[in-house]
Image (cartoon, rainbow, N blue to C red; front, side):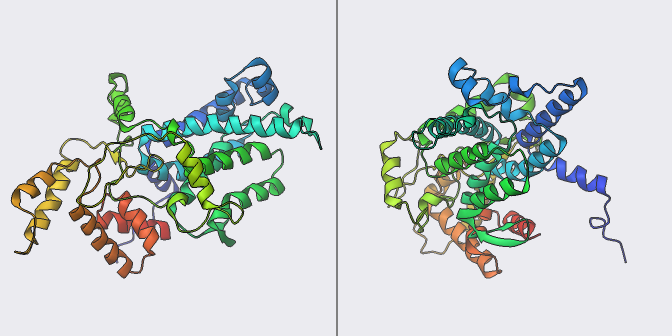
Length: 401
């Protein structure tokens, strides 16, 4: 019998396959953090007090650069290794859904808001009249883990799962997953910044509840960056994922559109009212016969990889092939005319789906559920696969592995 080449592949082959499947921005951030730690190790640099996030220095001397330098530096080999091994799967998942430029902006936004939350909490606790804890404003923090905690909250909200596994030992409710990790790391590891991780969780929840919507630019912003000539070499790389600019098949599940309340202590209407006070960014939509759908700027949909010429069909060609198959299966009672089908073929992949595409998506979703996959995970996988059931099955099988 012919041996199974995949299962018998060596460690180097497996590592190469794993790294080659990592998107551009995720791999770039990983390499930058690893390179910075290696350079510091070689030259003997350990003056982290100059680059760490120090609330007192940021507030009194306005050293804003600490907000971003502290994210890229790490204190030990285990520190950078653990952070990057955690970041790679999270970044890969979010980059494939959001696109490379949008993920880069998201990490910049999270690093900034984490620092703001860090400052607010540190000074509130340090100068409260009841029991002040002054050392928090002089606590020096470094590492990417604050952004990672934010991404954990966002990815958990995006996945729509009800439970998450803690180190493969036991399952916990998904809404408590980040909080339980926060407590466990405080007990299992030393020199862990409780306030840095807590700020990351707060930023992640603020993002998923839509409180940062007014800070998110429109699709034209990402398209203009992708079109810059100086970035053409990056855009052409296989791992670079273009931003589609819109949810291809409806809204992906988030805390704000689920039926459960975010907390037993906080009314869901309270969060909705707060979000309504925030100025929201309007995006271009296509109105159907009954409703008008709008893009969710937090979870904008599936990114697409820039492929080489002739290797994969373009989004327009894929849409045309889909509608050609729909035309072949059309019955005489089909209310759509040929001119309407022709018009549908010209709809871009980054626009809101039409009624026919939604029906096709629902049919494929029913097939996946009939195959035994959980409905919420099947919906997310099918949306991430641009409605391709074969790709969705691969995503679901990889999650089970």
